Length: 126
Image (cartoon, rainbow, N blue to C red; front, side, top):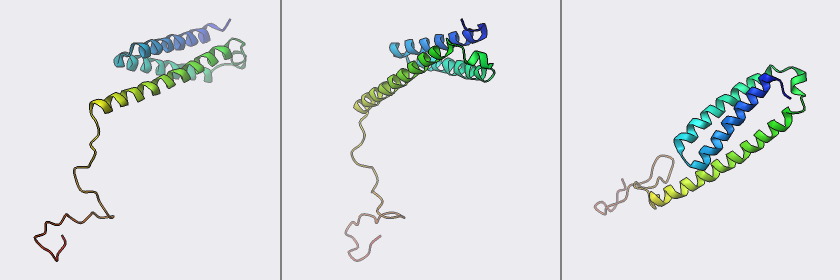
């Protein structure tokens, strides 16, 4: 059994991790934002706690498997967020397609391009 302060910190991180997973499944962006911010703060607090651990706490046999489980879960959450981002970008591209041509003339050199000639001045270029 882990020491009480370490058990509480790990339980908090796991609880917030599960909240982020639930928000990912639900698809609610506000819930995901809130849950992610709370998980981030819990991870920061846990990281500060790890800096203060004694060598006996660090080498406890129950600590490493739980940390591995959390880190593997975070990798899966990151992949899910990347997939969701790609899906949202594809949907957004369907709703608001990109314009095929630019509104203004393309620049040809380092300073600008020549203007399109109208034909009024056959020997001068603007």
